[in-house]
Image (cartoon, rainbow over all chains, first blue to last red; front, side):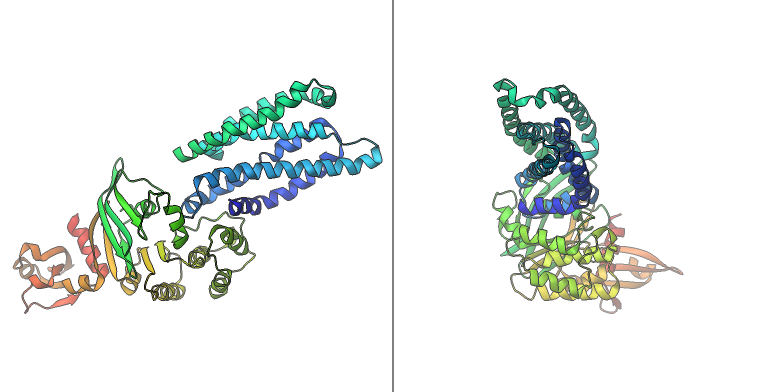
Length: 195
Length: 282
């Protein structure tokens, strides 16, 4: 599986350079919306890698190699998690550095909430994209992103105040991410095998 | 041990079907898989690698049933080159090597680097900028660099210029000098197969017309060139396919043992045998 993640990193590296630039610019503005937007945006990077795979018919070649279907599916989740974690750490570092000047501290709870939202987005969209491909899965993907974006919009103000929110939301988001992943991975495996 | 065993494999895709395909490739030999476009060569390879599940029959590669969980480990010993090199377009040859080093337990970086040099492949050029020949050479380099025991090659020499093709055929020949190394190669370039193979298997519309030793085939068949009257004098079973050669003459593929000694026959090439058989089947 490590080799598959490594391959995807090589594939998306050029896009990531642009991402890093946008990340750096947006991270400087310490707002909950920017943090959520960046992390959720990074959760979509596996689809860039999958689009390249589809264009080159990589899966036909991968099927001849000693990869299990489990490895192929899990590698996409791992890639998404790594991209989100990297963007989160990057956001935190840039916000901390910018905070030295502005005096504002980075919000760890906001970042954790963003990571949970990114994971949930990946959990919902990845099974559909694995089943229908990036092209055909795009519609489902757009509907989900639209839904998540509206939810984020509603949540943004609340998330800004996250430390003072009642406990359930702080617990609900990680629980939702964990439950979503527990359901999403087996579903993705099943759909990928059917493919 | 047999490198490949297909027993009564059936696979239907509606209009096209592989029917009762039984094929054996003994270990240490090279088998050429021949057939027109759409005859079922690539489907056979996909069935062999368990990418497709057959409707019926069994397949074994290097002694292991391809539908068993153990087959994944066997894939370590199988080098595959498909009709196109399906690497993502942004990867470079160096990156492909790094990915494959994490993919195959027995990856030999020295061997891979050696093939990159031998094939004159640039290490840092993106795959999308490779010519078709370069792409195929990269695929061949990968297939040969993880110490495989079996090579499965689907049109692996297509797109290569004659000089490189000859070099690649020599590499394949070298590969089978180890007695447990085997090759299944499909190709439209029948002269390559005649040069390389010990066995020739001929698929026609999903049906295996024959799988025989090449030398046996060349001894069994001859090409008759003469008049239609001379040809008519032969028994019907002796003639496998015929064509007009102009000016009232005919050429035909015949079984040597069925033809009277006085009638001169030309040596049949593998290409003659295949082409006449296709015409005969039509």
